[in-house]
Length: 132
Image 1 (cartoon, rainbow, N blue to C red):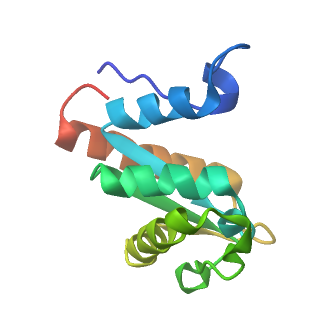
Image 2 (tube, rainbow, N blue to C red; image 1 turned 90 degrees about the vertical axis):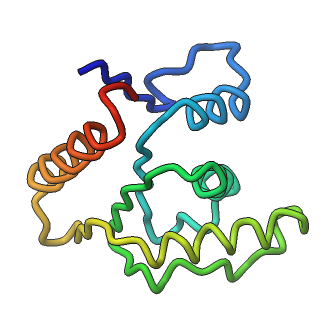
């Protein structure tokens, strides 16, 4: 299996254009993992990436860390460009209704989460085809 994971902090190099590089990685991927945290909806970059995943019909594996899917709401949208707000809301609605993994940092086992997520990702990669 030819798996080429992309994690911005590990894959990008000094001088890379951030949005251009991340957008290209999302465009090429078969399966995407979105890790939602209590402050996820405050990040323009997180919301942009999720929107692109949804718009390009990627298989998204959500991981809800210390947050319930119903909490994925864009409440303080004044910090975002007006033309992006509806795009972000649409992507968050899609994520709320996608079955994912839940993790509670107070009593969860990080190793179990990583193992479960890896198994699900590998299964989905094989369903999509042998290359991601």
